[in-house]
Amino acid sequence: MAKNRTLAEANNRILLNSNIIETTLSALLAKGNALQVLEIGFGEGRALLELAWRFQDHQVAFMALTRNQDGL
Image (cartoon, rainbow, N blue to C red):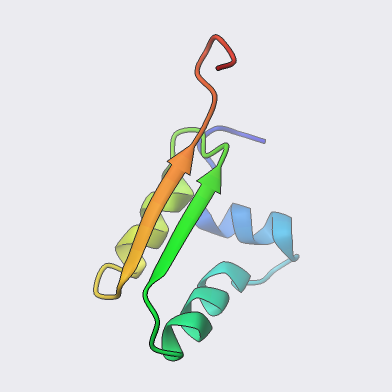
């Protein structure tokens, strides 16, 4: 997968032509709880940044892990 994927591309890989990630986060937030979202293998982080922007007014903490160039 490209290191610079968009949120739409990430959604499409999960479920064709969907916005499943945003829908799921919105449904969980509707229950009144703060959320923590971890993306593993985020590359340049474009999709995660888009999510952080869309949910900036909500109690969501976004975190990410990826390997460096040495594979660590």
